Image (cartoon, rainbow, N blue to C red):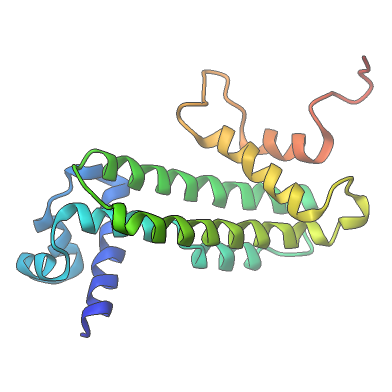
Length: 192
């Protein structure tokens, strides 16, 4: 297997381990999940921190979620489509959060890679927002804002639903985020 493919395969096998166990995952466990010898991990990556950095970048890749969003039945009512999207986005955000947290717990110096990663992550997030905006496109004539703005705001609400620092005992749900993005925060019949 060419080195780039081997690195990608190791990163792919490591991501679910990191989501499940964080930085405590060992290189022996990574090697077993990757189907390679432990020494291969260190030939592919100079250290565990570099591998974890690449796992974080991989966690942001949008291919799977975009395919899943596009697979949602377009004949469903908008609220049901958005709920399905919301569940996908929240699961992705939780996976990303786990990977980032694991990287934070390992001493590392990735200043050289940071700019590349930020640009790549920004592009990935724009692609996800674009996929969500396509769902709003079919309802553009009903929106008071542009579909991409609706998608951006919806994703912001989903961040509030899923981020552990923003949650409380009475945290809103994906369904709450869908209701707010479609109908606002004020109940029908209630006025100021």
